[in-house]
Image (cartoon, rainbow, N blue to C red; front, side, top):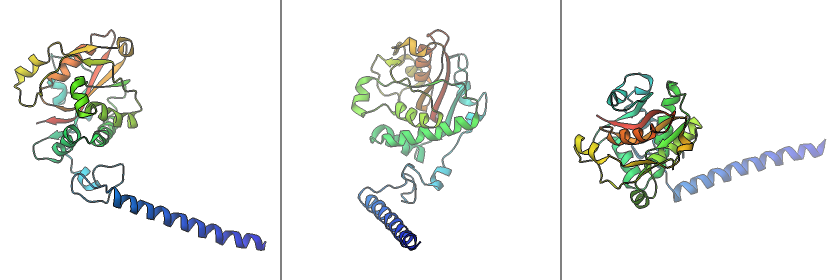
Length: 249
């Protein structure tokens, strides 16, 4: 009996020491590798988050995932036979969304893409309209641009989405065969012309008969998504939906 009396104080003492050591190591790690909110700069946030709760709450949600015949779906009417389409947030200049996308595309911050992918996926999961999707297809980059950037931003978004939706990512099923200049400053007509014959199916077997979700960071005119989606729908018995993080107003 006396032996047990000695064991319990030692057990709780060791447990307290381990907890204190763990807290110390966390503080030391944060000192060496600070993790701050991409919005306001606070360090009061979880390590897996890019934004604090307040900044995340301020992101301008579209609500499109919940609504049929939303502006993204109407964008493709008469152009592409899609099942559903959505964008999670409105994209405007000098906004937090613009900052996050800039970090993802031009600052090498792949983790932002994974984080945005999770946010997009949570919206799809809550809406339930996208439950029939069987696989995620990131809009492919030309290999030259992907090599320069170090990753495909759409694939990074898909990584985050897969963590929530538990759907496979078909990264190499479709490829971009033509190097095109950035579309940012192109007119609507030029964007469509630039996309003619750009995409080719690389693995028809992986796509055939599936309901695919084509994913990208931003949709503006929809020309690039339309061209890639048209290539995907050439595969027999496929169905297509589209999801992007942001929609340019």
